[in-house]
Amino acid sequence: MKLGVLDVQGDVTEHVRSLEAAVGSLGLDADVVAVRTPGSIGSLSALVIPGGESTTVGKLMREYRLDRAVLEVAESIPIFGTCAGMVLLSREGDNLKEGQSLLGLMDALVLRNAYGRQRESFEAELDIPVLGGGVFPGVFIRAPAFERVWGGCECLCEHGGKVVLARQGDILASAFHPELTCDTRLHEYFLEMI
Ligand code: GLN
Image (cartoon, rainbow, N blue to C red; front, side):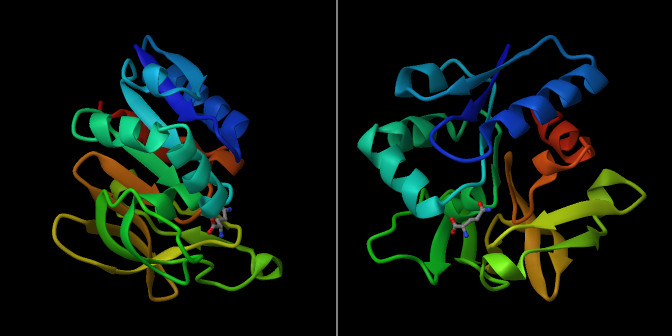
């Protein structure tokens, strides 16, 4: 099977590495590929939408019709959005750029730059019950957060009174960057959805 990382902008290589490590720990038979055409998304068993800049990623996705391709597979494969990817997966947004469009796959209201500007980026130890014991290293870089979730969207972790990890069906979103750490538990949790 093929696991894809959307290669439009952002930390694609880091996600490829984390997925490869998670594939190794789970003993899966899978190739991890960077995808940048609508045609290559249809053959994936899972897709990651990396962090970057959600306005740029969203614009390029529209331009290259990747948004439609993602919406087409959303019912059938797990999708994991981190940081800017979390913004894009949301149904509603606060502090969005004018004209910024979202994929609307999660029943959530996202706040862009929820913790302030780039210089307010931080690390925090997170308690994520679905990963079992032990804290998870949360790397927040001009991070968003869900201010509100409803419907099928479930909060899996909160930080500072905001939702920083959530799941809706087989769609997962994190405000932080697990791919910038050596901890592959969240990528493994994601791959277990396949
Ligand atoms: N603040 C950025 C945005 O809105 C996300 C930052 C990130 O992905 N590290 O797109």
